[in-house]
Amino acid sequence: MSGSKCARLSAALAKQVLDSVDSVLFDCDGVIWRGDQAVPGAPQVIKLLKEKGKKVFFVTNNSTKTRKMYVEKLSMLGFDAKEDEVFGTAYCSAMYLKTVCELQGKVYLIGSDAMRKELEAVGLRQTGVGPDHVLGKQTDWANVPLDPEVKAVVVGFDEHFSYMKLNRAMQYLTQPGCLFVGTNRDTRLPLEGGKAVPGTGCLLQAVETAAQRQAQTVGKPNHFMFDCVAAQFGVDPARCLMVGDRLDTDIMLGSNCGLKTLLTLTGVSTVADAEAHQKSGCAERQGMVPDYYVESIAELLPALQG
Image 1 (cartoon, rainbow, N blue to C red):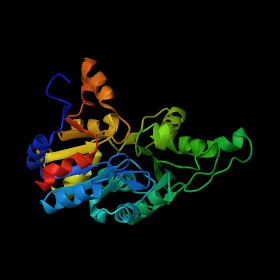
Image 2 (image 1 turned 120 degrees about the horizontal axis):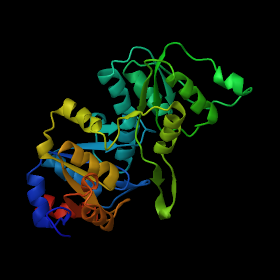
Image 3 (image 1 turned 180 degrees about the vertical axis):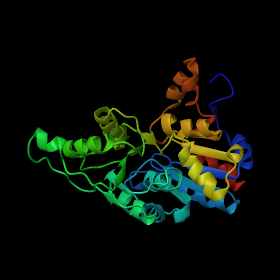
């Protein structure tokens, strides 16, 4: 590719890049694992980075798992990981409401039980998890009972998303001072074999449309996710590498926060996608062009073993 961006990472260049950073942020699905299988060589990469004194963090837009659940999965797949190294949107949403919003009151949660647990872990109460079926007529829906203590609506991935949840969120969001937070805007969740299912972004857009309000999102590519890591571990953005498989979330996060960026081709995005962004002449799309790319993070092994 033309220009200095999106260079294929050779072993020599990989050593140079790794020597220039103290911290590495990894997305999870499509980067260190695919479904329930570790990407070959990935556990060894994490192990060697840590042995060389690098700080390693796992940052994911998936809101269906707590940090503890992520550590269990990482351990099962052979990764060395601690709970405080994991930053998922369930945890980051709770931190955002607690530290940035200083929320006083309850959360109406469209989301998972994992999100409920992360909210409760920082002392925030919620209502809304689980099915919410349609009852009565339209006038009943418009006057649905609301919890007066609710001061924020949070939207994450919710397999029980329904018309009544959408309606309830809208009714809360018409109240003055009610905060509106979304975990992320990923519209599709890619699966193995080229299949996909709707992502949290679809649910969030539905609530935004009904409420005629825009949510503040905390997940990638929003810089809050990196701020969470940086605040707790003193990470210097100039000496940090973001490794991901999605240009619109992982690589854009890196660009937004001034990190070095590495695209791995074991997940969603391709070099052709990056090339199209680079040639577009659009300033925003330039943020989705990575500094480097590899076929798989296993290509970092020679630089780490040398």
